[in-house]
Length: 306
Image (cartoon, rainbow, N blue to C red; front, top):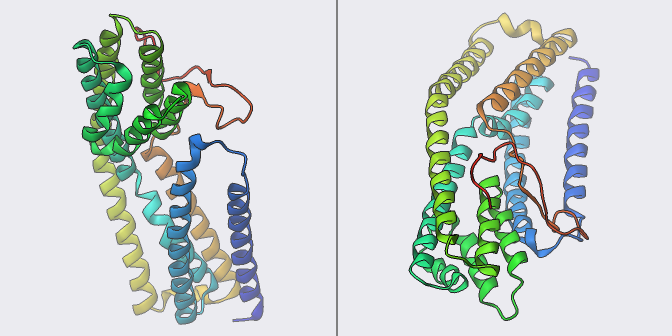
């Protein structure tokens, strides 16, 4: 093999690393965000540390594959595959976590409605609920309770932060309802909260049905990919068929195949996962200098008003 393919592979790897470093630098240099998203920074820091370890393992694996095969494209494909495949096939876990969060929110809102209907004060009820909040939303509820219990607490800002942690249109609806509950209590508040709880329960049921339908295609896709990987490795190790890819033109063909396969997997990932949901609220923490405003959501159900 000539030096040219190696130089091309190194250039591609350096370009990918440069793009990743630039993105990480831009993401981490915004110091103007408000406390409403500080928890996201902590989560992002943990994720960056985990990603750094993953990319280190991927780089080592790519180097080993490149050294053993003599194919720079195979090494780069390994570097991309090690962190990429778990993300491509992680849609099921993400959906399960989202469903668990919404189910926890439904249980929590229903408890709040029962306590408020019994005559308890909304602020005190929320503060007391942190001790027994469902695990999926316990951290967010604990932060909300601590903020509301503080002296001269900014109720609206605390609920905005709670909605940002939930990061779902239904979470925004809960935050809006709780703002009204605290600032303008009325006898109808428990009924509004019960309606929201029922809507959350319906949403959880619908999402579970969707994920059940998606489970079999996801399992089949994982099996197909695993078989293809094993088949490709077996061809390389036990036959001479793959020798044609050792040339410069062969590496270009292999690069094209890897690119097409990667694009297909990315499309599969998009089809297997829900896209980002439009939020009801645009928070001032996301846009410094702006007050929280209402925003239309594609997921708002008719008949439920904050």
